Image (tube, rainbow, N blue to C red; front, side, top):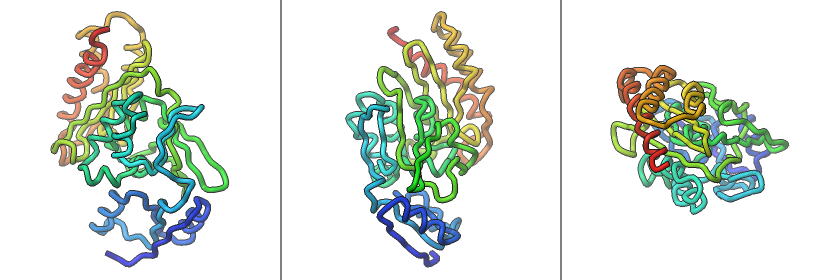
Length: 280
């Protein structure tokens, strides 16, 4: 592994300055992605800027007047074990639980999971259906980015150079019901072959699918059909599964074929919708 400069600034403003001073700088939170990339020499940082030594960034999960707030340094274990998350958004706790192994969940942060911008990121689909807002900072001012505009492509986000993800805000976290599903080659510890979240808020349905396109997707055409109302039955659910399968863009890779991914989406969307509406 190549030698690099390591800095631990105490403010976001100083972190941004350090980042911009050196070409080839990387921010470091949990490090579960970065260390692997460095080990395999996919990236060779000139400088690493540690984000864990400042009061402005934290792992707190709390209720605010604007919604449920999750600090960028909250780990998957923090999210899975949070009483607030379990009370209001148990499907988000499930998504955190299915992220990798127990040891990784102790280190991997929600901020890093989002900023890595993997199409298969476990936090992507739950936050998409929750209409979450990403709050970023450069120290002098903050910016709010709707989650639907945050992902720009494989490993590409809406963050500007040096910009830091500070927290995630979920305005609509009460009286929602959702289900998270993940299919992977190895249960829990592998990246998703397909992941998805379906949410019901009152009479409104939202559907998001990950690992089947360059970014996590909201399937608006499926949502429009569901939100017309009418009988919630197996025939409708199968139709929605097929609509979702037509609106994804999967690829063949080492985890599965595009055809298999479409089949999983077709079947599991229908199954999750039936589960979500059972007893109503």
